[in-house]
Length: 88
Image 1 (cartoon, rainbow, N blue to C red):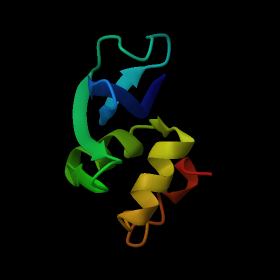
Image 2: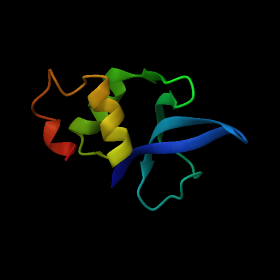
Image 3: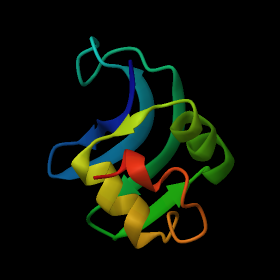
């Protein structure tokens, strides 16, 4: 099963997260299938590769709760009702 989750990058006290599609059995810093965006909590910036995210969600990828909140803030689920069920 594939999940959309955060992968920690950056240095100490200056964390940046990559949003990646990754196998469930992999650890947090493990090998990802595809990078689909990033999130900087310090500057509150987000970059999302929307077509790739929609592709993974349509194929059944489950976003984690934090990634789901990031996608909601980006209003990704406003247009698509078919993938809204992936994000509980």
